[in-house]
Image: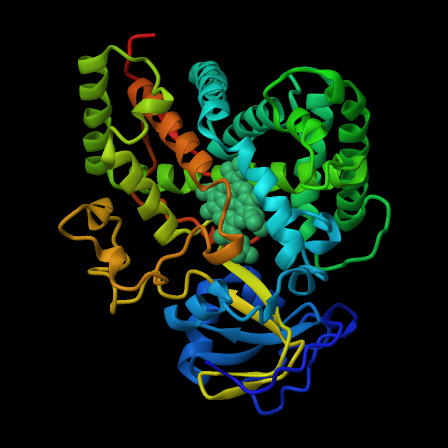
Length: 461
Ligand code: HEM
């Protein structure tokens, strides 16, 4: 990628550049553009664009006209962003920015760096140890209650479990309290509305409910701040309420609620999707399910541990590899966006300043160039010796890369491992042999029916 101009003037006040007649492709249908194929079959759309137009093509998602770029070299160049060429704030302002303005993902350069440094303290080892204990307790008791449920469907249950851990760990909100029920309903409404086709605030519409939910989440967190400023607790809300910036000032209430709003969103839906999709693959691949169960049982026999502790998290490589393989086949965050700050050349095409770039992070996840039998669920491909993910450092980027790389990656891996360690030793789970649901990607990658599972309790409880 060559930089062809260095003009950088007030990039936040410029409209998106849509003067892209020289880029292959078209703008799709009036108003909605490529929204339907994007929602219905994002992977198919990506493959079609690659076949018809090559690695650079026009894309229009609900009027957000930009350029889709693919391939590990381009991902590396854009995400490492050595010359400060790409803005997150401007990229996301018209999509998730309508719900998460002021969240850390939407901050650029020095502002982002300062805030991220503060965030990192909350993810240090000591607080993490406490979080693991909370997670294990909540997950264990939730999954115990699943045995008595007829026609069990995983999605609503796992979402509730992870929202319960998020409410407790992030906001210090206890399960079963009015604030918990309020946040739970709000986050469900918000996620359902985010990709709504009609983005007008009509009461009762998905978009209207989502906007209402956002305001209520802000109010809920705001009312908790005065108490948290005075408390000595381990949750993130207390942390943000007390932490000081480099100039000695505290975060304002407004900054805190915006960080909290994004953090809870970033943490629970991505991880729910990861667990659902690994469960889906393990239900379809019972031999793998049994192998990982046996790895967990062997660890329990050796250590006597009912749940993993923080120090055990790397002790069962099969758990890590299964999670990564789930992300490869069904990425929780399939796409990201950036906006150019100055004109440049990508793959031989001139990309003007202020152009929206759509980045399908999963574009190499099933490429035969990198993976053997790419559609097959095979966690061993991540094992030392095979290391199929190491051919290019940006071929597999489920957690992104560069300055905005997922700050919760370790936290997410902990949650997934803690979940499967307990779940696999309590239950065998299966789907009918001919089960082939639509695997949707938006708003969250998962089987469309939420994954109905037959659960068989195996630990005699
Ligand atoms: C399987 C689970 C997860 C996946 C796949 C995932 C993926 C990602 C990706 C791809 C990005 C970068 C987006 C971009 O480049 O535009 C990101 C950013 C972020 N994630 Fe995650 N995430 C997961 C779980 C979590 C969890 C559990 C947390 C919090 C505890 C979290 C917090 C964040 C935050 C705060 C950012 C923004 C970082 C920044 O802008 O500096 N994520 N995540």
